[in-house]
Length: 154
Length: 106
Image (cartoon, rainbow over all chains, first blue to last red; front, side):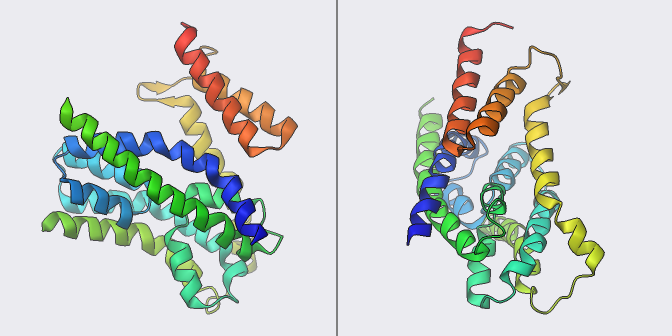
């Protein structure tokens, strides 16, 4: 539990830093013609800020869906390097942990855990990660809502 | 409906690159040279992310001393180097950037 507390504290600042991103994303998504459920749905299902900004920008420009998906795939290839970098540390862990943890492996998470890679690494990934991700998800949902409302009014 | 399909495909191409190496971690044996190379991933990728955020603007490369992103990044870097504290580093970066943006006309 002490790990969880440390992890939550260490990543709280990163959650706060996500607020402006959420607001801007919400406003851009409204502009791109996405309805509210789609806007929130994208934040929940596509766990990557860069992916979301690319998607709403390309949607606004009227790009084909295949182009959007291909672009996002290329941009996300860097996460393959993160995941490969973590391979030796996760190979003794059950698959049911690896799947959700890889879903939430973002730039910020990787930056936060790569400092702790030699000390009980996976506990750190877990503990640094999930309070951050929960906070992030909540924060993003609220800030997306704010962005949508602001853009809708103007 | 097609929008939801788009979002699901986006979710998939975001998720799969993260999942595959970790999911295959106990089945795939990497050659030593690749393991050695992967050790440099954090420094390489994070440097690339920070550098482009600091020096690349929409109209090109900005390496002049009037680049307030760079000034704030240097402040944050020094604070991080000296204090080794994440919070102080982020706060120093944010405050110096806000001050430069609001009060300094460069």
